[in-house]
Length: 400
Image (cartoon, rainbow, N blue to C red; front, top):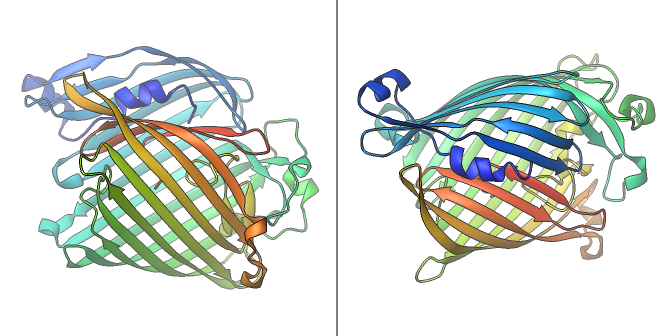
């Protein structure tokens, strides 16, 4: 997602449930905000175009729908047409659909549905699927010491499907089981960089197709006062996952594990919130495709580097962010809060935990700007600085 598109995200990433026609017939308010889009990102090139977000609110003024058609000209892949629709319902139910067609290579179809209070709040239900071709994916080689000069490009052609079903043990504890399917093929990319398959053909997952079937069990403990826009509490998640690459002739089996802890420390007025996150990941097994291993870089970790800048079997990461309230205003009939968020991300990927060393940690300081419509919408823009020049990311959620 482009950086300067954050202005749009803050306005349009607000929508929620109900049937559109019935909302309009019930005197719901619909507002349209044509907005120019100009942006640049390290991996994805330069964008220029128009976004036409359409907001729908119910008779009580609650935003219920977002439809956001976009027409963008990109410097790498050409003209792109996109249609986004987001629907949110009471109880946190959320449906998303994204469709995108680009002049050169790129395609995207995404559908997801989640209900954190399924069957009167006893269960959690989520399922979804996607198909996409990302023509600007980058790979630098394995490990913390991979060189910027070894940058290569490929198109990630992927199909994904997943489901998750959780049972609430109590109000703050959930046990969940999930399955996922991931079919990946590396094709030639859209840039003038060396083709990853030709430069790194010996790396697992680079040559040939990979079809991953995974089975996961997860423990969640979450005392935060909101899942999307929390201001207080703690969240702990831990999972164990067993995977098999069924397209590899050896049918290798490998396992993945993660422990993530997030804690929010609000000031008395909650105008400043300190957020701390620690993340530990491990991958055990052989012939694990590089895109299935732990990675640092991107919108949620080491925000001073591009997506998947560092990749290896294991990961240790730590981040601190201070979310400072700076303004409140009314947009499209709802109250929106704006925050300034200085942060520091640190982390290291490694092939063996015996190699952990604080001197090898990458550190990326930065600052973010957030637009929030509570309880269920966040738009954000983050800039992180690194020795490779920094990176800019925007999205519709907090980084953690």
